[in-house]
Image 1 (cartoon, rainbow, N blue to C red):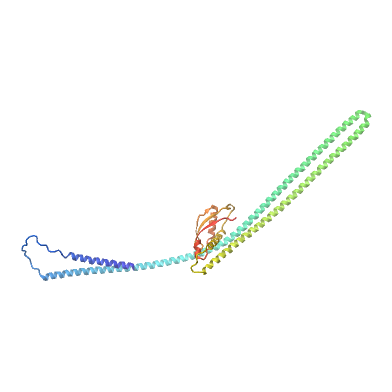
Image 2: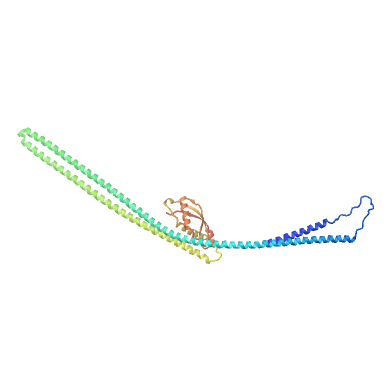
Length: 415
């Protein structure tokens, strides 16, 4: 419509310009100047009389020429206007055809886009189901691995306790052996002392016998008494040596008995301690597994509760009210829990954290994940968890969704 009006205005301007040109041509052909008076004295001039009929004929002819020029100008104007109208009509038709083609192209693009979106959502649903199954398997595997690690640690601890007990028993056995060796040494020393005493007694007896024989018969009685005394002393010394040997043997046997009893008690205590440690470790592993299962169940139930709560927003009104801070915090907490389900942590992350910026679509699909600010290992584990958790749980309230499309998630490992 605007193109057609512009064409009409252009034609009118051209027509006015042609009329103005014709008028100028006509005006140029007429001499409006006044006759000049002669500056010299008048003189007689011969003149020829002009025929009025010829003048009238020339005037008529001039009028005809002017009319013909006007007709030609009008014809040219009409032709120009016709050409402009035809061009405008052609342009308008071309514009309509182009609009129709553009509308068809846009419709085809929208149809293709709708098909792509439907395929993408179907693929996303499939990926979500696979991720949920994978997450359940990973949680189960992690719980079993943790239980196995706890059991392994308990067994290692029990083995260490057993090793310590065996080492202690070996040390006590060594001490007992050393005690036995000391007893044997003491016995050998006692035997040596007895032999020395016997040797000294024999030497003294020989000397007494020699002295008795030298004194002759006069001292026979004294020699016999001395001999009897020597024999008695020898017997007493032999008896003392035998008693000393008996006491040493008894002490060695008692020391061996005590050492064997202590070794048996130490081994028994070590076995009992190892069994108790193994029992405690198995109980802790069972508790850890139950706690992990309970935590997973609690997360699932909380997620279902949030989805149920947020689903109720659909029936409230066509224009939802602005969400409260409590609703925003609760929705953020559920997104945080969804991400933490995939958050793989290690003991090296204790006391560290990372803040990650996440851009989310209205349906929960993660569009962009920032590099994160904080510990590098925690940031990398958090980014992987966010990708696995996509699509994130989003409410049905459009106003609340707007508050959650640009999130800063603070990830802190819980060991």
